[in-house]
Image 1: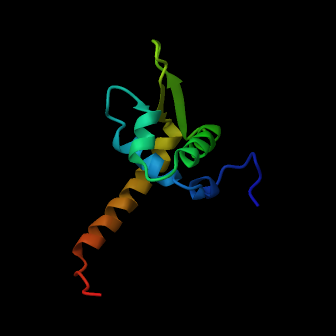
Image 2 (image 1 turned 180 degrees about the vertical axis):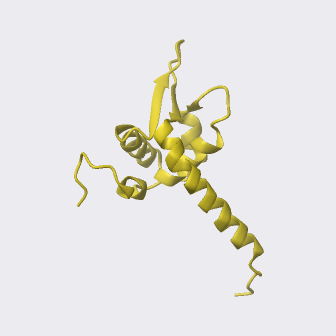
Length: 109
């Protein structure tokens, strides 16, 4: 069992963690951070799962959050420096898997 204060690959095993990290990574060049509502709309998982996973990623400083300065106050997320280090190889693996899948012949099963 993972100790609470140890960061390890176990944090990535949380449901939707990799999908959230990849979504934030794909949107790092935007002028604004990614809104919570956008993550909920675009990451395939329940909103409760997404919130729990975001809290875990925040705890391990993989992502950071802030709120807009004007009402309605919206929560926004972005990757930290550590998050970018984690996201880059995940994105490369994701691209390699997608590339391989697109090259495989279609089965009639």
